[in-house]
Image (cartoon, helix red, strand yellow):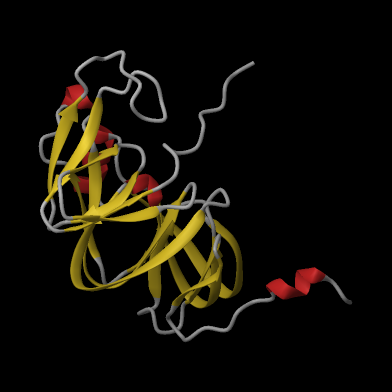
Length: 223
């Protein structure tokens, strides 16, 4: 068979690696991952081998409570066994971060998968209040791979001066940064991609923030 489809054949990878098959699909080789890893529930698009998927909820009772209260966090599945697993989420772009004894704060909606060697918890952004929508995100710490998604090609901003980002457009940022919430002077002001946006995430210090080219997927309208 001849086809341009054959330009997209499976890419080889090292055991235990998180490897991009293309810019919208992740391949994880279970060999070498310690036997399992965590992924967003429903993100599996294919697998080869003897693989088990177990629902993990929000990752424990304490985190489940936080998720119920904050609306943040992920519905996870524990992926174990042997073989290769392919993951994707709404054809969003996928990026792999390799943490080396570091920490990073991520919007829970942008988490695709992560190695079991990473610890994580749900935390409220400093300066956030219920009036500003809470803004709870997930902090990952340790050494291991973390795969995140972005809806729209992102930009990585070097925060060397006060930086302000639309809350839904912020994918992740360095935990070394100090966060605040900035309120737009007029509630009717349309300074972002949406209308009437009143609050932005403010970041100061030294670090990076990743901003996607959208505020997330459009909410379907009922007919």
